[in-house]
Image (cartoon, rainbow, N blue to C red; front, side):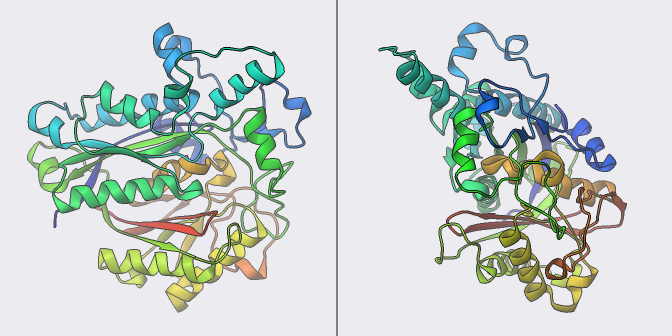
Length: 402
């Protein structure tokens, strides 16, 4: 089995339009959540989110490209460019033939759906643009990444709600580890911050009207975000042979299904995913220093996740640092695990653990070290990244400092 490393990272999200900007914001505990700005926002009960500001498609893509790229695809391509440029890889010949793309998204082209429903149902139009289907399909972003960078190997999209990115990265990792592909572009993206996207989530009654406060006793719900996180996963030997900079090692993963409830999380399912990732990576639980939590800021998720951590790690749970960066950038749904992986890389590579901001009141059911409000310097050699989705679909990645 091959060892797998990350040699490139890219992002765009509410905290920044690049990895350096995002990590700096995480270090400073910046809140990227604010008042939403789009058509008909005044008709919504929930009017806050982690919206990407200052992103102009016209300055990045030509008219033909814009007619093909939903906002989630635009984010993906911008993040992929940063990641691939950092990796230094050029995909041609055998490398191009065997390398591919696995991305996660839950909604795909939600903005395109929203815009065209308006045209047909509100404005009474009888025709839509001929590219509506290729623009809104969930695999659009993966397809355009493959075309842009000549990636001819296995390419597809994973949709498992809030665990989509972690499931996608797990599949990419498995392909590189098995020797199927020497390198894979992976991660995820989402852009549901439009009237229809937020209105649908309002119906679940899990959204906060004011802030995302994971693990705090006075938390009152999740806050949506948008953006993308994209990575280059590569065989370690291949990366070292070409002198690539290695950000960290992806050591293992595990996936589990609660098989219990469509919306309520299961402690047992989350615990199986975490313990499975440790076993797959051959890592002792006592070696884990940091967990990037799913940490949505809902009562059900936060207390269930903390209980699962306590079950898996036993007494060592009290020595762990566990934080939720959703408090800063919001919940990117299918893209969230990808942006959160950046916090794990920062902990492993830079020795800085991102905080859980907005923490105001201790909760006895979340009595772990949640790194409240301020980033912390610490030596971390192993980190986990958790993702637990509606439908009871769980995916956890284990990462190691190199």
